[in-house]
Image 1 (cartoon, rainbow, N blue to C red):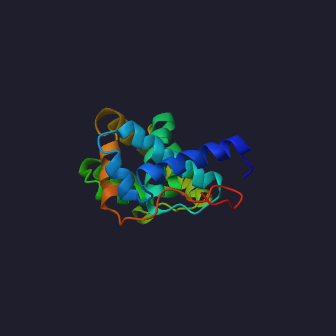
Image 2 (image 1 turned 60 degrees about the horizontal axis):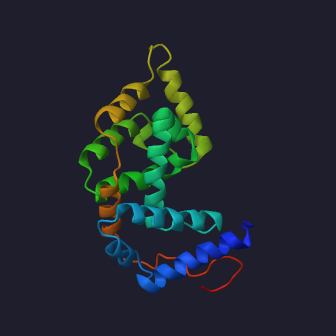
Length: 191
């Protein structure tokens, strides 16, 4: 991806500053931001955005962060049907693992009920295949006046809005410590 030089430099400076003041490992970042969730969420999102912009593979912590924001954004905008129709649904298994590791039993239970609508409770991780699965779900319930997602969406909005930041952070803390802050920022330059 061709980002403007000023954007590349901004990322580089931010990551260099984090490495110098906090460290580069995931657990260093989490410890340094304990109780400062807004700052932590900004940094986590920035790291994931960077990796996506640079077409780098996402690590498990990255996938947790992306799953966290993807579910909340898509379900708020169009319900679980939209979540699974969009690319955010590619990370459904990471979301489930995050809910388990984060100890959100209510969120996990509700999400498993959503997953139960799919064959073998396992949506495809490929967006096009998942769209076909959604069409099959819609066809099964055509005679009904409501979609099976309607009630699950209502429950989500009413009582089990998940995941929250605490769940994400707890799940991240449970993972093995890895090099997290990007070292190289574009065009092969070392940070």
